[in-house]
Image 1 (cartoon, helix red, strand yellow):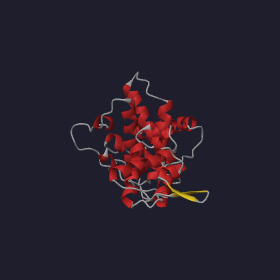
Image 2 (tube, rainbow, N blue to C red):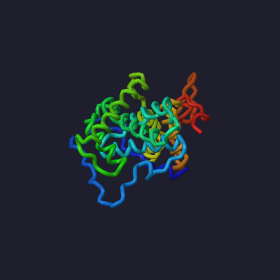
Image 3 (cartoon, one colour):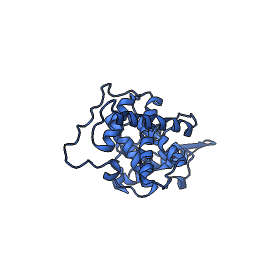
Image 4 (cartoon, rainbow, N blue to C red):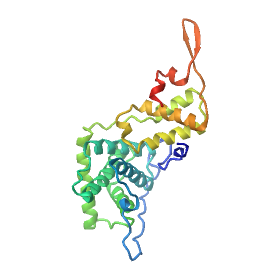
Length: 259
C-alpha cells in the first residue's frame, strides 16, 4: 500500500558505521505521575507471534535512536533477533516470562550488533536505555534492579551467540539497492521509498528466507509502482544485436520474484 512508504523505522542511510555521538544518552526522569507508567508491551498491543516479533523490532529501533546508532547496526540487531525468535519461539506457558525474554533478547541483539558493526555502546548505556524505553522511567546505576537487568541481558547475549553459531556477518539489502538505483538512473525519491520498504521488511522474518538482493530489488520494484516511476532500460548485446530489457531482466531476476 502507498502509505507504507513512510516507514515508522529509521530511514537513515548507513553511510557511516561510526558512532554519531560519544556522549552518554540521558535517561528520562522518573515519572511524577501517581500511577505507574505503562510498560512498552502495554502501550503497544501485539497479539500474534508475528506482531510480537515486529514490536520487539520497533523496541530495538527506539533504543537505537536514543543511543544514536546508525541504521546498519539496527538492521543487524533486527536480523539477530529474528534468528533468535525463529529458533526460540514463545512457549505460551507464561505470557509474562515470554514477554520478558523477548525484550531481553532484543536488548542483547542490539548490544551485540553494536560490537559487530564497530559502533559499540557500553553495557550500562544499553541497559539504561532499554529499561527507559520499556518502562518509561530511569534506572539507578548499580542498583539491585540495574544489576539484575544487566545480568539478564548478558545471559541472553550468550544464548544469542549460540543461536547465531558465532557467525556474526550479516549481508543487508542496502548496498544492492544503492547499486541498482545508481546503475539504472533512479531518482532520489525512488531510492528513499525503496529504502523505507527495506526497513519495513525488517519487521518480519523475511530476511531469514529471502536473499538480500531480492529484497532490495523487490523494494525498488514496489517503489517504482507506488511512485509511478520507471528505471532506465538497459540494453543487452547478443551476437552484435542490441535488445532492450527491463532492469530486473538485466539483473537475471524473474518478474515473479518481485511481485
